[in-house]
Figure 1 (cartoon, rainbow, N blue to C red):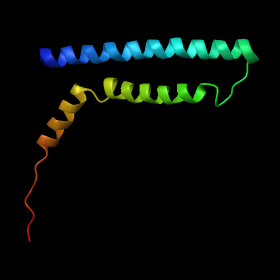
Figure 2 (cartoon, rainbow, N blue to C red):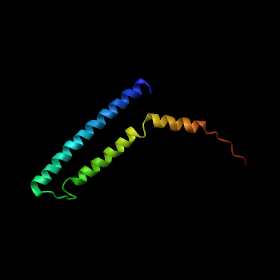
Figure 3 (cartoon, one colour):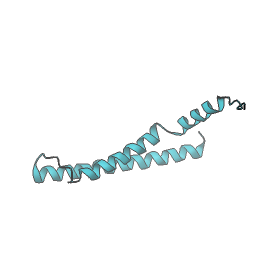
Figure 4 (spheres, rainbow, N blue to C red):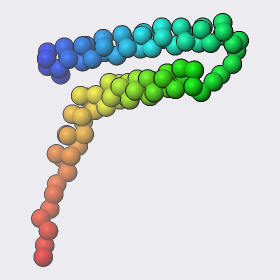
Amino acid sequence: MNYNQAQQRVHDLKKFYKNLLWFGIVAAIIFADDILRKGIHFSLWDGSVFLAIWGIILTVKAVKLFIFDAEWERRIIEKEMKKTKEPIQF
């Protein structure tokens, strides 16, 4: 990994952690508001849909950052390059 890739990864990680922090803050506010108004009651339309969509987006970003990163891509490219392709005989 060269310097530019490392710098980009650090930038992406910083954005992800900021987004995760904001998700936690907004979720705490929404759930605290629901508990104060109605007690412990889970409703699908009170903000939970918003949090669920945001959570799915964060999950996709986490998978991209931590599983399918540049190192994974490099390993797959090397694996594909090692395969020998034989010409098709007609």
